[in-house]
Image (cartoon, rainbow, N blue to C red):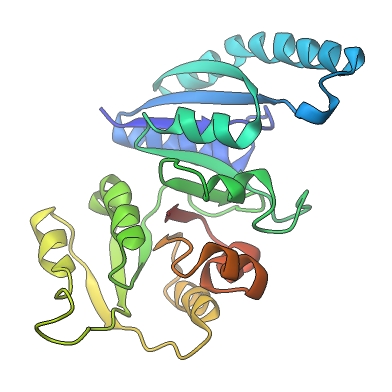
Length: 266
């Protein structure tokens, strides 16, 4: 059984990440855990009023178990509700390790912090499961039907594709943008046989060479728009993660400007 986690920061039925998570769970007959992190900030933990506030938040969050189970029942899926208190990023990353992937909101309307410094994208630095990031503005399909894969031969991209496999099998259209650069024959490892592997997994794909020039991120988003994709699957932080944050890069641009859900692995 597919095991999914929906990271629930905002406990409302109409949150796009929750709608997408429930729709995928139903279609995949998956078990879906709603996870709420009561975030602890160590510098203020010496303040009694801060501890009291955390106690109140945790108590209120645990009381939302009834809401989550009613939501699961409404969508005809099996699920559980968990509340964990701790430092946000390591808590979310560690709990995700027993999930096939984690579904969470990507704040694009009013982000709390710049991309790469907020809790969600910082989790991509941690040893976490692949993440399906749903923009909080997303009004498209809750079922990924038209999927674009960004392929560059990296381990991150391969991990993202393996995590997305249950979704790829049920998609109506899958297109691979092949931007892998072959190394020196007989010295560098040969390209991975992705096309053959996907065929064995029962996924029919359109294969398209990808020559992007220098602006990889923008070219990926333009390609997603041109095929009306409702999911982009890609590896995250293909270059040095620090250089991506400071200088920019494909991952950063896609996270900043995405108009569609992203399934990322790092």
